[in-house]
Image (cartoon, rainbow, N blue to C red; front, side, top):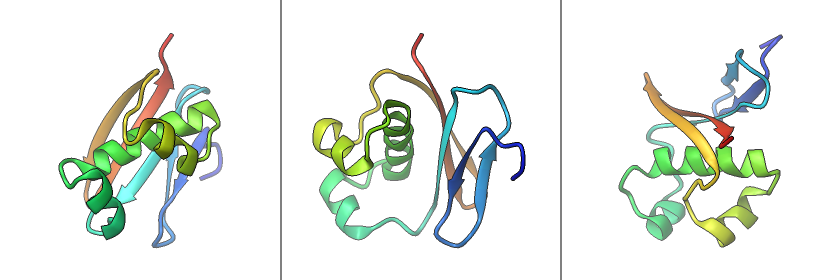
Length: 98
């Protein structure tokens, strides 16, 4: 992962990195490893897509995810974000709205 501008560390030890422009953040999660209590709280529909987008927004705002969830839930205001599914991963890449 040398040279990655930003990284997301997965629960199984893998790391996903972004090698593009600085000021970009990334979050990745493993499909099928969703925490049941969070899915119950926020809903099953596109859970990991919403989660990774919100995590990116929290990273860009430099706010812990626990605080972000209280303030914004699984929304991602103020960011431009793309979400992709690659194999068993859901990956969001975001930049601040300019």
